Image (cartoon, rainbow, N blue to C red; front, side):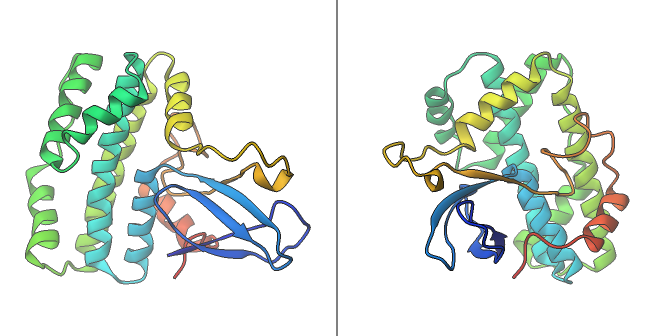
Length: 240
């Protein structure tokens, strides 16, 4: 998948194509030879859900289900980090500890469950067994889901993610914790020795279905069917 970005140095309106990567940081070279950097303000879990939504609209149902499923896992990782930040754990300690569970999604889920209970003093919502069985059949047994099955799963996952994000937003000082997460994981360092404006990363906010950087902060504007229709109508920021 690719994304179009623009040079921050000149007035060249021609987009530069770059391949989507893990870091959200992109180095551009425009047609005039200017080199610049740009970071895309999107969380990993919402990028994965967006990839799934595009796959769904394009008819790739198996790929869509896989993207939706892993989006949940990365949201749990995000919640783990936010809750540990809230409790004062350093980035180094968070990364060192996550390495211990990084290859096992069940261990990550257990870590999320206990951190959630510690913070909210109530059990977290669980993904229904029916949905887990469906996901496993698709991702592990080669099941080819129908469009309707995939839509149903997508709506369920979307609702689960929004409810969890809303719960997270109910935390005291959540904006401070989110900003710390953003600084730690989404604002890559750049070379300060080069003082040219092109060396200071510019930011690009994208409109996604989940919309961590757009829409209402409490996610009250997030309805799956409405967001899917908007996705169909707006210009794609991700494309093949």
